[in-house]
Amino acid sequence: MSISKELIGASARPLLLSILSRGPSYGYAILQQVHDLSGGRIQWKDGTLYPVLHRLEDEGLIASTWQVPASGRRRKYYALTAKGTRALASERRQWLQVDSVLAMLWGLEPRLAS
Image (cartoon, rainbow, N blue to C red; front, side):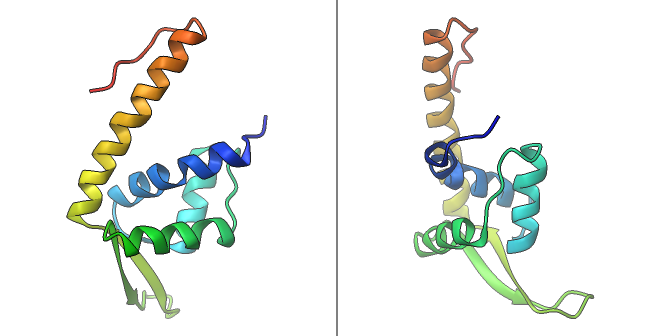
């Protein structure tokens, strides 16, 4: 079952903030994490990832640094800022509220947002 582009777009921000809450990462690794965490149902391309990363950076929710890992290839790493941590908490509450409403509408057991 594929996930609509609209839903993938709407979930990009909370997904990225959540992934970066686990620790700094770089573009390709983030793409792989999204793919792996979704069981292959979400497959972002660079054109999906980088505009969102740039917006989050412009908003001060993430910060980037260039690093050269042991592999020798220079990569831009992204990390969550304190402001990003607060934004993630807000995103989590909002998504759980929407999830709860949809669960009720669909006759499922709702999960309450904390």
